[in-house]
Length: 214
Image (cartoon, rainbow, N blue to C red):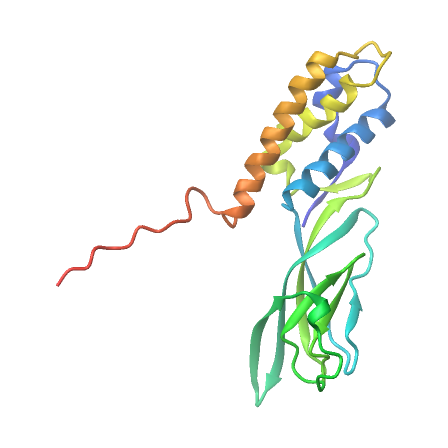
């Protein structure tokens, strides 16, 4: 994942809301990007780690620029007889985890706020893990991931402008424009949500089966 300087992303909105302080522009942009990422769950990041025998819960660490808001998937692996075995863990409700189950190969996981997860059954040995997390920029981050900006920059800029135009008593204040920008931002959110639901594939994910020919 690549990160870019937040200040370098402000040119387009600065041309519209002239004389707006840079700190306000940055807050507006990171707020819009954070809201966009939170609603779409578009930004993903892999984190490699490993289990500890007899330990159920694990922390995902912290990042100075991003908040981890959910776990998208976990893949476990172990070297068995010289062959690496991989399997996906299934997301589950932790209230159904049986504390009396013997330690063994984990098969399920549950996200634990904030930025933690629990495994079930409790691991018996060391297993390698690849945890894919869903993130969003931190409030006021000076560096932000470029993942969402590549395709949805204009929508995120609209979200920033919706915020700026809604600030009362400023030369650039304009509730009508703020509402129009809000609709543009929401359209961007909806489009990104649809892309996530398609697994980031283009077009419909439904496959037309071939006709059966005798």
